Image (tube, rainbow over all chains, first blue to last red; front, side):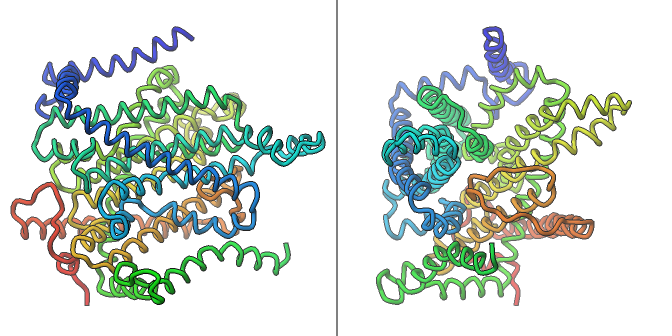
Length: 263
Length: 327
């Protein structure tokens, strides 16, 4: 176990060392791929000037407001559709499937008519993107709850609320978290795209700006920070899942895990 | 169960979409929504018809498909051999590389786009590289998992029958792994469709994403809706088609519901045979060849039109001018 962790960390370190050495010994052009230490140095400098802190904060704020909105809307909706109103679920499922493939970047041009080009439009785009995986994973989680567990709980005389709280919700929890991870991955990918298209701040804007000014070091610094934030978010949700829903989610979780590489 | 039961179920399932479409038509007509900003459905459908008629939509569709298919092929070319090697022969290396690959797969394709623009210029290569990058990861991960989890019983039996190494690969490992690999291809393809449209909005002079972006820049509101509707419909059909292929091609495999469809896909009725395979291959080659010609033509026109264009798309000119026109 311990040896395994060392080996895994070793490979990442090896990669970073390669990144450091390849431009140094002229394997790649240092103008296009700067050394890792140079990138780290740029990141630190940018943080010292404070400008970068601002962009990081704005991007994170946008991503999390969108994600939180999606959870607040998607979770109750998924619970209601999955648990209580099967006929409404059947009626709305194809429509939701259509909405889920609606590319938020394209919707952005329409959303702007209604919300302007301010922050609310960006939050809406992220929320729109995140809400579908959350709704679908909630529905799937609830619908694949073990029938015999439900029957056993009912025969033990559990009420509706107790049944929901003690049986349905725990068995849906692992797939809920997987849906959340999917949504967070989406949120980051599309946030950067949205910020590149129409924003005057944020990490996506920063990266595009650096490219237009041929500032390669800043470009790499931005891309590295974005990757770091994405990995951090993914790992934290995984840790939350290990803490609060460590049990196996059964078939639903496996299905959702397959979909994970959508993001 | 019965014919009426199927019919009822079908009606129920389509009721949501029908209600939405009705609302879309009536709300602007009754002035609940400003018809200038939300054109009624009929106007949008007419606009799609017009775009199809002038040949604009087909050309941009062809260009987008070419980028998508080329990127997908490149990704397959890299990920399949790599996945088989890592999943079958160098499993220790696969374990060690896993965290690095996971981190790399989290690298944002849009953060890479400026980098690719820097390396490859604003031509097609940057866009195809983004598509390849996005598609690469699901295919690679699924190939590794699939080749790793082949039933050992099958491998041992084959070995006991004295198969050669290449026979083992072609007759045992690949057939067992292909259904799972296809899931990776499907996920990669639908993700590509998402990312490609966005990438075309950021720095392109053609393609479906550009069509919508250009309409927005010129305030052609019905055209925005037409392009968006067409793209959504296309994405939906692509997703359904790939899911359908997955079910019908590998009928011996059992699949649980996919999260996008939350179950309830009917069992297959038709299995693609030789004819279908030839037709599919022909379609792909037509996309590749015609698309390449079209992309070259459009790029040359763009080159001739705007001498030194910046990294951004040209925001002027209607798509009618840039397309090679129809009737």
